[in-house]
Length: 169
Image 1 (cartoon, helix red, strand yellow):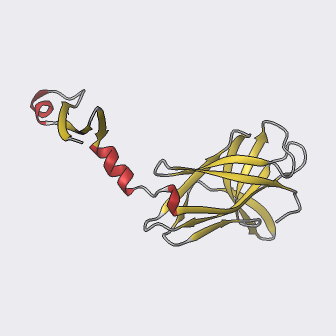
Image 2 (tube, rainbow, N blue to C red):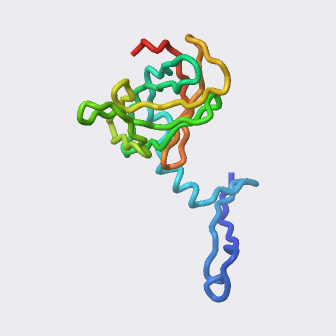
């Protein structure tokens, strides 16, 4: 296999600067891999470094939101930042944290959660959880729901959640 460096001008730049600037590509046969993408992917945490356990979706009656619970372990050498989740079974999925202030229970919307290297983040009743809003089709206890966890670096981690009763922890 032969590797060749191929240069192409960067579009939308002009003048002397345009002539100096070149976008570098590695050519492997007919394929090109952008050097910047190669750098990004080499520093991104792989799905193999993240582990989800005990993923369950606590189904409430009617059209009430469902709660999603699981543990996310980061076995990599760098932090990961969870920024959300999505599922084709629900109109919207949000990250929340249960709170209690002055004897009043509440919930806060959470935009991002960092999981340090070697740490585990638990989504559990009374703490962090996913809130599944407006299911798009009826669900039954024992069914499985596909959910994708979304990370700040653009990584996606598919997870299968088991639908459980409202009384399960």
